[in-house]
Image 1: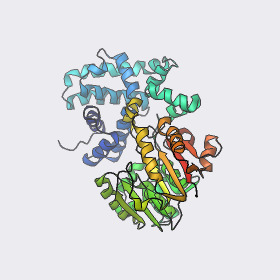
Image 2 (image 1 turned 90 degrees about the vertical axis):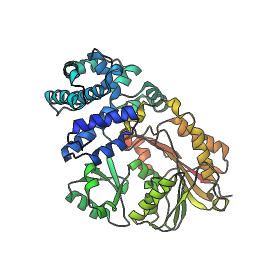
Image 3 (image 1 turned 60 degrees about the vertical axis):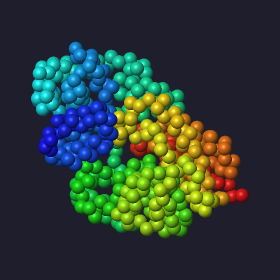
Image 4 (image 1 turned 45 degrees about the horizontal axis):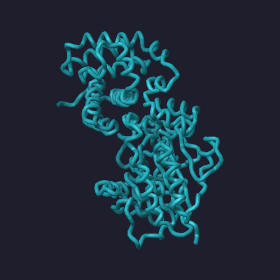
Length: 449
């Protein structure tokens, strides 16, 4: 198939791949932008539509089921995605004229071989245009109503209410319906923050500082970063401030010996290396050979010399010669990822039961990571999820099983103040309070005995 030059057509094709073939939105989007000849404005529109439709699927399907004679589940797949794209524009994109959204949807039926249903598409979207605000305003303030209004399954709504309270639940639901901000970490081994900011602004990228993280910048638009000269792209890397706070909390120092047991794709490893001024040593491990190779290339590209890569299953015992030899160990475990659903919106539709086995694996990895820490050293645990079973419960189980470790108060004053909490050995970062992804960090000392 020749490259597609129309944003809506490319988006429908991408959505079909996600829905019918199980593709991940971020990977499908990257391929969409790479292999289709889209102008800059169309690239931005395709990104907005792909993420937006995936994110708002429950809400869009509710509106379509209310206005169409055929249930969404019984629709032709292409027609279903065409209607979702059209309805998203009508409901969530005020700057797109309604007639244009409807006309383009009708045109898409011809491109996808379902022109016989063009009248159906036209009629349904006109009903969405007329009725959507009324239908949404009539949703009750129940869990079902919240699910349909915010496109977040009730199971997660109940978990977050129970864990974090009603106020934080509402903040999460609102934040998860908005685009995630983009942050970069400046590679201070190659360039000063002010110099990079100047060069990015000359390229048309808006930059702003991040309080408490002097090497971080918030940037917009992120799409422009990918078209900068290759050398300039080695002066920074994309990294959410939650991950940057995680690295700051570790407090690694020049000359120390550090392990990052679940390191790929390597952003945290490199940020820790910057805190160490690239002096000392970092052992970065991952279970997958291909990820280790990619991490080796990335570290080389960005110019770090203190990092070595080791392929290892972090849930299994480490080489005995390594045990008890590291000053600090970072344990950022595989998780359900419910803190990053703005970046991977399709995972919000997975049910909590799918992750029942994760806490046991996470605890196993943490226990093995603990064997690497020297007496008096630091161990740190983190996830990018908002699920107590993977966060606080794992921490409690670890402390209960390992009396040689004690809680370490995290040096994250700014984060605790934003949450209105006293400093502690663990913290949950929230998008509506910290401007970050949802994230959990916990710290431990190995008692010096």
